[in-house]
Image (cartoon, rainbow, N blue to C red; front, side, top):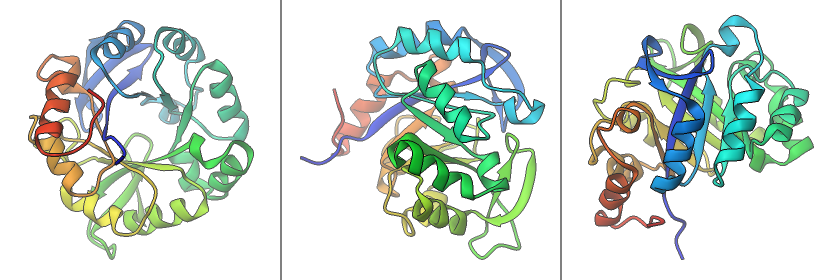
Length: 254
């Protein structure tokens, strides 16, 4: 049986509330994370991703209380990221109820962290998050950013994806900063470029606006599709997205 494409709502959290903006700016409130998590679980989401989007910027830890309450509410896999800097942080999040942990800024600063987490907990726990923008000066034309997309690094995003997968990342969450929150569609060129160099699952993120965007991301090589605003504000439902994927011939959990 082919592996089902996963549909994943993303809860971008700031100060304990779900927020959504465009390219992580002009944020507006989207609700309580625990209530939204409960609703998405009932609606058929395959997983949830919880990102504390300002944790790295402000140098603080992810809000463990919200993670615990969310984990107690849903019974589907929960990935948590934001402010994760060490093996100890991963341990704390897993104990709070996370199934997987997302890492971005800290891994860019110290790539050895990827191997340390994979060795301690298994690579299936580690989701390497890449906030990527188009940029001149890199071989692929894509650059890694950090601190919620606020800082460029000069690092080629495709090369970084390949290294992270080799070093122990179990999945790659590839978020297009150019498309994030725009509802103009996923960056299929970015997805294709990353898919070409890794054999671990790729999660497409950034830009979903209509049901047709999701099959297009899978056709480009995504194993899972992640979205936020279209779900939070009622533009699309989980069922509509899964229906579009099913109609396009991709296996989903209905």
